[in-house]
Length: 141
Image (cartoon, rainbow, N blue to C red; front, side, top):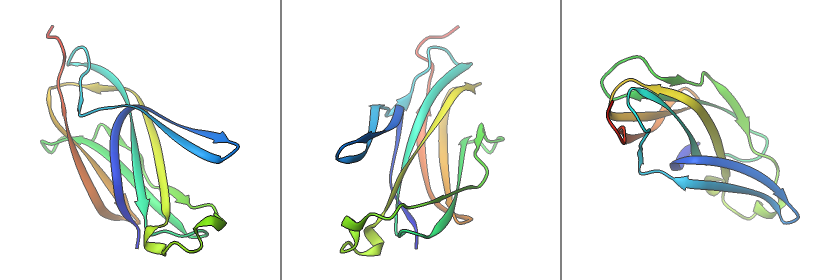
């Protein structure tokens, strides 16, 4: 059964093909999202590690980013289908520990107020994990 094993908010996340295989780079992890001004816009990325999925299986992920006050989500990815590429070096690793890391970039998200926001991650239609983060403007208008 798929499960979220890691999650991070960051400035940017990019994949790179190298002679030793694919590498995933996470740049400038965030403990809080700190746009210059709120209200204002801010760009960020998230990385989601998912285990319990093997090669050849297809799964669905929905990412929702919302204020923690019940208002409409700022981001709703809709259902995204993903799978895992066959990696022969993992055949001895138990399926519960095989998986994938997905990166998503969000540009110019508009924050209308300071406060706690939450990332909800749904795997195959079920809420799998929620990760809160504080958003606060560095300066006031």
